[in-house]
Length: 299
Image 1 (spheres, rainbow, N blue to C red):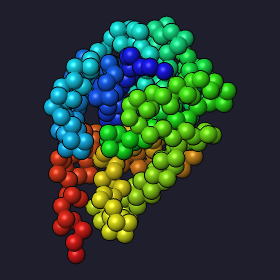
Image 2: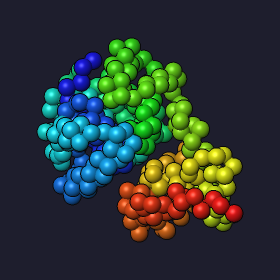
Image 3: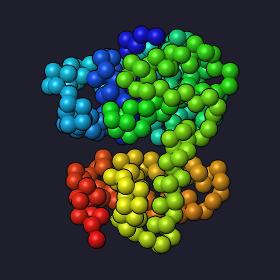
């Protein structure tokens, strides 16, 4: 399918990245968020991408100017959804919030609109019961810093038509993503099925007082020969997202370790607006976190 208008619902860490990547890929794109203040925060977030695209992709000033010209912002859901070919929902990882958004969206879209959720852990079959376009509803999950880690994981509920799946693959390609089809629903897709157990193992060590974040990261970086550890990744993912996922896991498993992690993150970081890289402080301070200094892992 040819995408002439793409809408992103929610301009958080990943929502803003998806929208900018869409605009950079040549697609007229709208970012919707719930209030004018939220939209102003999205604009500030998006403004940081220019330097990153220049550095990481060697993007030209002309290409970036063109991307900015294709991007619009609004807190008016009706205006956002009008004539949308594709809508990507990137609101917080809570079913009640997603249901509320889908309910409001239902009268605003056509049967041809492709609706994609960027949910990290919820399954399409968890959400399809209140999705307005059930026959054209799938999950498309992106990694953080999507312009570099350009994978789009595509997952769908049983009975989803092949045409909708093919269209989702087409959308991913138009966003310059590598589409990865998940043939059977699994919470966490491929990437997070491997990544999140590592992240929460590190969080359990921290929450239980076994070790501190920087020591855990140093151990992981040296042992695995990588450029950041679990807490560096957490800052990029966003600590609010980590809290939401931990609460979801607690509801699913009744494992009290997840609640301890959520409480500790909220009390020590989120409540103080230390949300990670997006606010300039989390487990590290930005734009130059300590783990980027070669001395960080020296004896």
